[in-house]
Image (tube, rainbow, N blue to C red; front, side):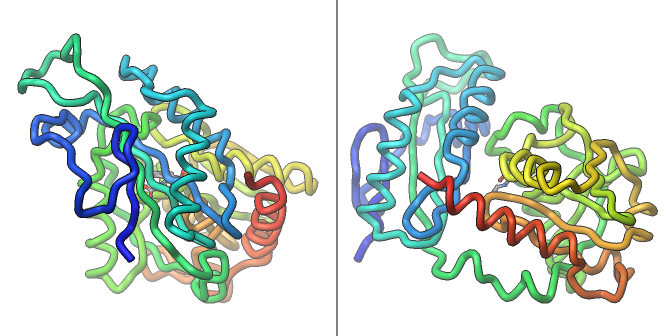
Amino acid sequence: MSRIVYVNGDYLPEDEARVSVFDRGFLFADGVYEVTSVLGGKLLDFAGHAKRLQRSLDELEMANPVTEDELLAIHRELVSRNGIEDGLVYLQVTRGAADRDFAYPKDAKPTLVLFTQSKPGLADSPVAKSGLKVISIPDIRWGRRDIKTVQLLYPSMGKMAAKKAGADDAWMIEDGFVTEGTSNNAYIVTGNRIITRHLGNEILHGITRAAVLRFAREAQMEVEERAFTLDEAKAADEAFITSASMFVMPVVEIDSVKLGDGTPGPVATRLREIYLEESRQAAV
Ligand code: PDD
């Protein structure tokens, strides 16, 4: 069965879906995106993703082609048409097609594309039991990482550098401080304290991050939102990452330095359980 994708109001078999070669998403990476996870056929943190999408669009003065209610309906329709039990919904809005010009076009109609990825057992990944190995790489991305744009070549290169080094992912470093992972937010745990970089233009404001920090505080865990150095991370008791596709995932090694005894730590493991339990309950 061919996947059904959404393009500008139509639900189409994936090999019939088309966007223009003049689309500014293609020519200028002039587009933003969201990834929302699906567990048990329901969407996790949908409202958070819709809110961040609006913020990304506003920052780029790009029109939103749909209301939040319409967006939810499209997500649900795609999940249903593709029979997604566990997986992801990818959404992208671009400024649309226009003759190539660096200035924003006045009359372009935004392009809206959504598709699903089926990932059976997404929440039961064996990696949660073994943990991730990360390497460090310099953060040479642009200065507005808080806008979720589709310019993902450097994160993609970082992921490849990690794979070549026998690791799973890369943490990016700026002025000695960890910004975030290639496609996730980064955390360390020292003693009982969870430390993660404060919000700003330097990192994406993770929707999973917001939920996890809220749950951690509700569980009386200590949370400190500040930049931490790579050296501090290597000396930490444990580390983990968060994202819509990985939820909370333990990190057990940084640049070949084992954290603690080299297995997932209790804080990351507990937060993963809490996040999955609470998010499933609140899923729509
Ligand atoms: N990535 N930081 C970066 C650079 C990201 O690309 C992501 C998400 C996050 C975590 O954000 P959230 O918790 O809202 O997923 C942080 C998505 C999953 C992706 O590109 O596939």
